[in-house]
Image (cartoon, rainbow, N blue to C red; front, side, top):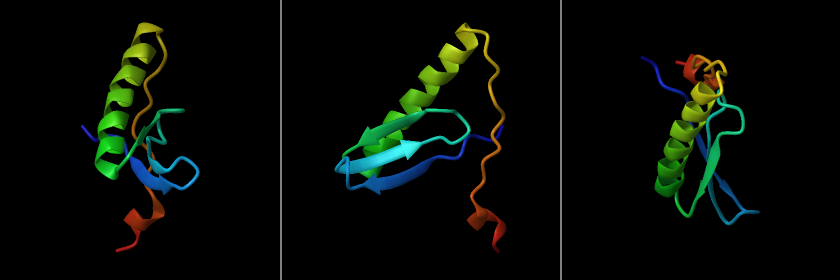
Length: 72
């Protein structure tokens, strides 16, 4: 099974790192460093998927792939 792409970037406004999963709408997390942001977004992903299943919503297939993956 393929997994969802995760973006991690520094936010000056927030003073830390943001991790998000583009395929899971509004699924993101904050961390003081990239590792913490990743750990937190993985928790958020599990919560997002559990909530979607509990409410009968469709779980999207992983589809997001940054353009850089196509350059090689």
